Image (cartoon, rainbow, N blue to C red):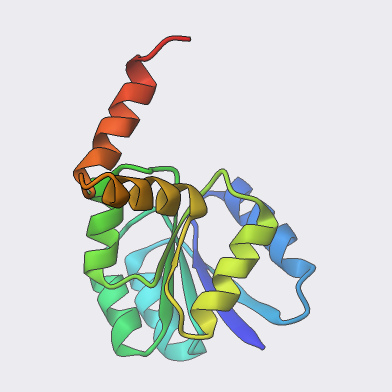
Length: 152
């Protein structure tokens, strides 16, 4: 059984995540926290396997999760390379975009609970293409910028 704690300050997001996870027999939702103080206390008291964070938040919480041997996932609306790199440098195990399917989110949770790292497929594809082109992560920023300025 995968025990998951979720930092999600918005009620609508909580309801959606609860609904998506309620159908999974191997996932136990321990609850929601809405602040760093609540998260720190809940990490100690509940001992989750996975902490799912709505957006990249408090580095202290991520560090506390790492110290408690809790795998951490950032669930974000940002695909900006700087945000992804910041989160990974802070110690998160996975980064997934909010426009993903419930099935993909659950796959990420299972992978991270098993000790793997996980990166949203859209981000991974862009990053791998940039590396293959010899441009590295900098190219990801260029691709995003072009998508905002190019009109079809």
